[in-house]
Amino acid sequence: MGCGSGGCNAGGCASGGCSTGGCNKLNTFDWLSDMVLPPHMKPFDVIEVRFKGTRKEFYRNDKNLDITNNELIVVEGENGYDIGKVALKGELVKLQLKKAGITDYENHAFPKILRRANEADEAKYKENLELEIPTMYKARSIAMELGLQMKLSDVEYRGDRKKATFYYTAEERVDFRELIKRLADSFKVRIEMRQIGYRQEAGRLGGIGSCGRELCCSMWLTDFKVVHTSAARYQNLSMNPLKLSGQCGKLKCCLNFELDAYLEAWKEFPETDNLTLEFESGAYRLVKTDILKRMMWFAPMQEFGGEWQGFKVNEVKHIIHQNKDGVKPELQVKKKEVVKVELDFKNDMGLDSISRLDERKSNKQNKNKKQAKQNRGGATKNTSTNNSKEQNKPNEKPNGKPNEKPNGNKPVHNRPNSNKNKNTPPSNNVS
Image (tube, rainbow, N blue to C red; front, side):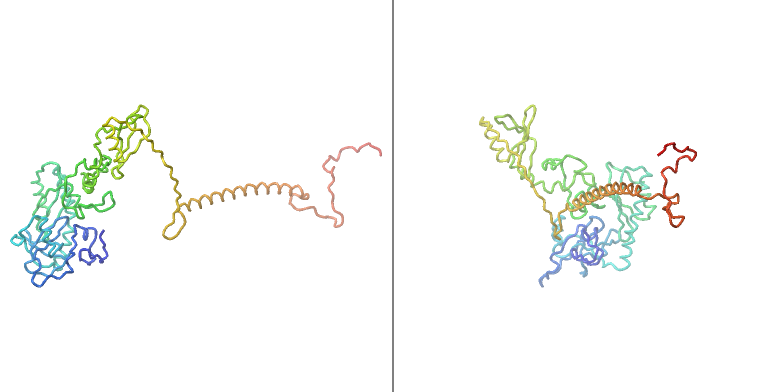
């Protein structure tokens, strides 16, 4: 990713302006920058200049200007000038010219570098970048009013702001003559419409892929090769369009990256079209192939089925050779080995296992249950104690105070028949 801190020396900028779209935008590392040329050699006068998106062009430094990588320079343009950044200079530019198919670079008519960008040029360069977004919104609204079946994906102003290039994608041919007239009247510049593919559109816009990294087409990939669905089949990938397609809507370019390794590995395997193996217990058919482990899995062709059996590629070839000779070997059922793994996790800081939080949680729950049980038992005990105390309490008056001595000497005793009716006749018993 871009550094954004000013300490990035990958491109030689060290200016603090490098970011995701700076250092990693199809950057090239000049690993010959620290080497001094021999006295009899002159510096190579062709320089590679980078513009917005993935566009790179070559210019001749006939004035021998002392420029550095990632420096803004003013170069010749069609009926004007343009502003770009130096991407690469020196002897490594010859390799870039060779990739572009330019061999006779000494006699080739390259456009020239006019000057190093001054403060006015830098300010205009920043203004052009700020105008691109509102220009794009307005151009899209005009295209929708005209009912054109096209998608405007990006716009780029030239350095002198006399020309604007609109990049679009479309399924069919589009008549945009009326659109060009409307855009020229609105922005007062020359308009150029350039159709690009969906892969080029994703490369210009950029983004993050499903792998978590920046898109390859926006970082370093410029040669877009055709990707077939057979590349996914050879790698035993799921034929799910959502997983196999990138942000451009096409098959991912990375499907071709490891295809050669898989094709080389497939040469070790026998032909897998309707492959069956004959054993004494019955026939088995191929159901799964693990390319990296060099394993082939077979399932019985019986009515009720059975367990799958895995064989190495050499074992499968040997059994096929025996079947051709009319020999049906005995199937040796491989027992499944149960492996008990005790996880003893400790990180670099020497802490306990990752299950320590679960143990702490269970201990806390057990402690809470025990505390609740004790509280319930204590509540029952306190209730019985209170009842016994109430029984042992002396008689109280309604105000809650115990009996007092009104006469000062003799206490007042409770009489058991005090609650009886006073009109009850006395007993006739004679002692």
